[in-house]
Length: 263
Length: 324
Ligand SMILES: Cc1cc2nc3c(=O)[nH]c(=O)nc-3n(C[C@H](O)[C@H](O)[C@H](O)COP(=O)(O)OP(=O)(O)OC[C@H]3O[C@@H](n4cnc5c(N)ncnc54)[C@H](O)[C@@H]3O)c2cc1C
Image (cartoon, rainbow over all chains, first blue to last red; front, top):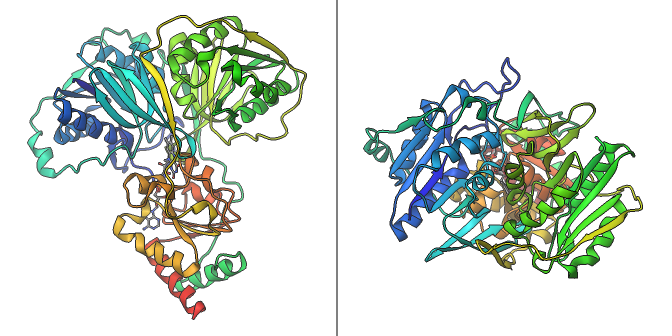
C-alpha cells in the first residue's frame, strides 16, 4: 500500500509569550522553537504501522521553506521512504483552500492508495485542509480518525465524535483520512536516526512544477484572508495569588476551605 | 445580509445544541429583518425533531430520505446539492464539530464557497468578517472572506448562547425523493459508546486535573496525592489521555467528559477551548500555570503563575497539616 502523509512545521507556542509582528497579520516567530505539528506526528506513525503490516511506500510532503526539511527528515527517520517539499514565494498567504490545491497538484503525480493528514494544525487550527484535499482529489474520506483496520481494499475506521462517543465507518481505497491525536504512540526519533537520513535528497517543487498558476495559490487563490491579528480580550480573568510559596499555599487552602474544595 | 442558512446538526435522535447556537447568531446578525433558514437532512422517522427547529426559523427546508438517518458525507453531499441549488442565501453556518469538520470543507471546496472555520464571532455590517482563534486561543484573527454569492462559516460550539432564541412562525418545506448515486465508498456502520472506567469524574465534587505540563506519567502521583488529601479525584486534558498516562475516561473536554464540580484545579493545562468546554461550569476554577498568558486564566477564578512542581507539594503539605 502506497501512502502519502502531509505534514506541517509549526511553532511551539503553548509556553511562549507571543508577539504580533508589524504587519499585524502574523506573529513574530523569532526565538520560537518549531516542530512537527502534533496531529501530523500521529499521522506519520499511523502510516508506518500500516506499512509494517501491509508493505508499500510512504511519501511525506510539506509545504514551506527550506527549514521544513527538518520535519521531513524527522519523518524519514521514523520510517518514511521519500520526502517532497513544496515551496514558492507565490504560496505566501494561502488559506486552507489554496493549501489543499497545492497539495492536490503534487499528489496527482504520486501513486497512492491512502493519504493521511492531521485533523488540524496547532498554529492556525483550521481543521479543513485534509477534507478539502479529499474533495479536490475526489476521494472518499473520513475526518477525526482514531482507529484504522485494513482488509483487502476496504478500511474500517473509528471516527471520534463528541463526549467520548465514536462511530465506525467503512471506506474503499483509495481514500483520505485525517488523523486524531491518541490513535497510536508515535515512535521516538533518535539523533542517530536523523543522522542516518541526513544525506537523503529531498526534492522541492514550485508553482510551475506543479502545473499551477500564481493566481491559483497564495492570497489570490485563497477564499479567505487574515485582516488583522489581535490578542483576545481578557475579560474579568482570574484573581492571581501572589507571595512566597508558603503564602500562596496558605491562600489556596483558605479558598479551598471556603469553596468546598476540601471534602 | 438578508438570508442566512443554518445546517441543523442532530445525532442519535437529538438535535445538538450547536444548532440553536447558530440559529441564535443568525437572528442576531439579521437584527430582526431578513430570513433565517434552517436546513435539515434526515430520515422521515426523525421528522419529529423538526418541531424543535421550525419555531426558530422563518423557513425550514427538510430533505427527508430513509438513507439520511446517520451522517454519511457522500450521501449528505448529494442531498445538500439539491438544497444548495434551490435555497437562496448569502451565508451558510455549520458547526465546527465532528459532523461539520467532516462535511463543511468538502462542501466549500466542491462549490468554491468562500469559507473559514472554527469561528467565535461574526460581524456582518458592510462586509462579512469572522473572528477565529489561532495558536490554541492565544491570538484572535479577524478574517475576511472573498465576496461570493454564498459564504460559509463553521462555528465553534459554545461560542454563542443556545437559549432565548427568537421565536418566529416558521414554514416547513419538505423535499422527498431518493438521492441518486453510489455512496458505498464510505458507509456508516455503528456508534460505539465510551468505555466506563473505575472512577466517574462527573460525580466528583473536587477534581485535580493535569495537563501536558505534568511532563511524564511518573509525575501523576503528585496530583493523586493532592487529590487524596482533598478527597477528590484526578482528571486530565487530552494529551495526558492520548499518551495513556491516565485512562481516556478521565479526560475532560469536548471529546471527553463534561464536569461541574465544586472545585476544579487545573495543573499545567493551557485551556484550549476543547478543554474549557468540559469544565467551565465548575463552581470554582483554580489554575496553576507557568505562563501568565495561558488562556485558562481567562476562565479561572483564582490563578497561580508558577511551577506546578513547586506549588502542588506545598499545597498538599498544607492540606495534610490542616487535616492533622
Ligand atoms: C476535535 C478535537 C477534540 C479535542 N478534545 C479535547 C478534549 O476533550 N479535552 C482536551 O483537554 N483537549 C482536547 N483537544 C485538544 C486541545 O485542542 C489541546 O490540544 C489540549 O487541550 C492541550 O492540552 P494541555 O493544556 O494539557 O497542553 P498544552 O496546551 O501543551 O499546555 C500545557 C500547559 O502547561 C503549562 N506548563 C508546562 N510546564 C509547567 C509547569 N512545570 N508548571 C506549571 N505549568 C506548566 C504550559 O505553560 C502550558 O500552558 C481536542 C482537539 C481537537 C482537535
